[in-house]
Length: 159
Image (cartoon, rainbow, N blue to C red; front, side, top):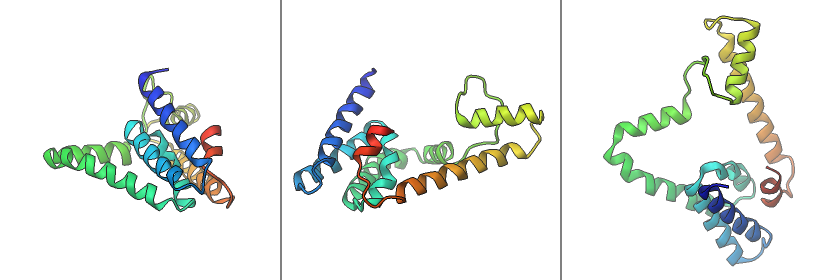
């Protein structure tokens, strides 16, 4: 286990312990702070964002959002072109292409569709990936909104 994962696991433990005490104001503060710190440490807990919305954890979302903006803004004010690079790298992806060493789902879909239709010019490569993304978003929304009683502990333990 790497040093970053160890700290993240500790923050998630605090989050889990706090989530088990839903009526405690102190536990609510611990949950908000541990989630915010976990987002700043390693962004994978952003996946809890939809559940935070579902559970109406507005304070946690506000604290996390403001903290990220306040800590990022000074850098991007000093280096404006980097903001556009950051947004492009995280929100916009280029057309699919062969990428050796990329073992992600996007590359798998490209490789499979290339095996069936071996040309980079085929517009279906992008369509296949957009369909996959749509399916993932629909599954995520369904899983988030399907059960009113869902808490934060189960998704953290199973995910």
